Image (cartoon, rainbow, N blue to C red; front, top):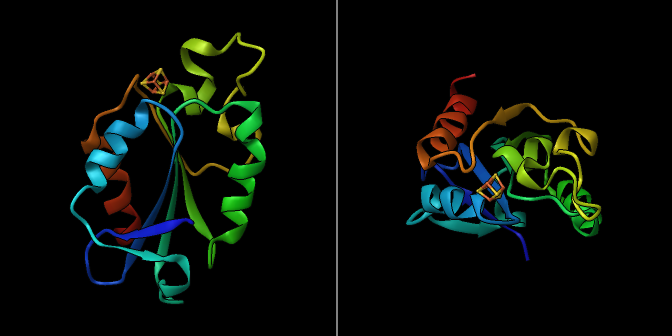
Length: 130
Ligand code: SF4
C-alpha cells in the first residue's frame, strides 16, 4: 500500500516515493523520521510530490502508472537520479526504460548516480514555495 510522507509535518506537502533501486537509499534517507499516512488521509488541498527513485525496468512501468493514478490529486513528478532520467548506467539494457519522461509527464529531473538527499529536499521544499 502506498504511503505519503508529510514533509513539513503540517499537512501542506506530501511525498510519495517509489523506491525502485539504489537511488532510493538517498530519497528514503531524506524522508526518514517524517510521519507517513495512507493516501486516503492526505488533505484535499495538500500539494503532492511523486518521486521515481532508481532504475525503471519495463516490468515496473504498469506499477509506476498505477501509483500515479492512485494519487488523490495532481502531483509534481520527480525523476530522481540518472537511471530515472535516462536509464543511467543501464541505458542499453533490454530490460530498462529510457527514462521516466518517456512514460509520464516529469516536472523535475534530478541528476546524479545517486543524487544526495539534499537534492531531494531542495525539490520538495521548492514545491511549497512554488
Ligand atoms: S542512478 Fe546510479 S545510484 Fe541511482 S539507481 Fe541508477 S545506478 Fe543506482
